[in-house]
Length: 136
Image 1 (tube, rainbow, N blue to C red):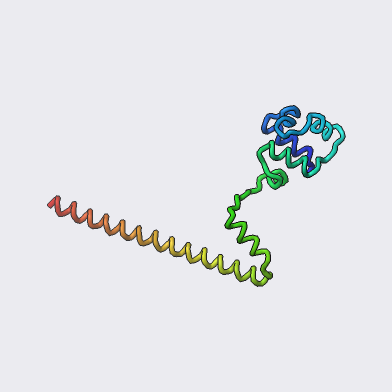
Image 2: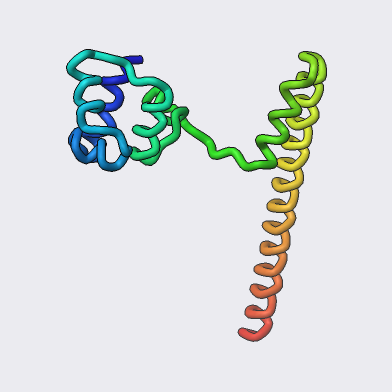
């Protein structure tokens, strides 16, 4: 990835010039302009300042276009931290358990929806019978 090009793209999207980026990031204007003039890739620390001023994380900066990013809760992070410590076999087994749980949940939801539809149909039939009795 061309880091300088990516910075330029984001700055253009946010309508920022070098001066504005320097004020937002706390970096000097000369630092910003010298990166371009010398075609110098910024250090991680500098890039973190720039990303912070552009309201994004380093991960978001480096992600390819049209990639879906999902926010991760603390609970999900804990789960992933433990998951990576498992053996490949344990990971496979756990994944199968989660898939099974999801499938079971999906089946229960479908069953619940079918029951609700049956109940509505029965209520409609009773209402129709009542209307017919009143009409007679």
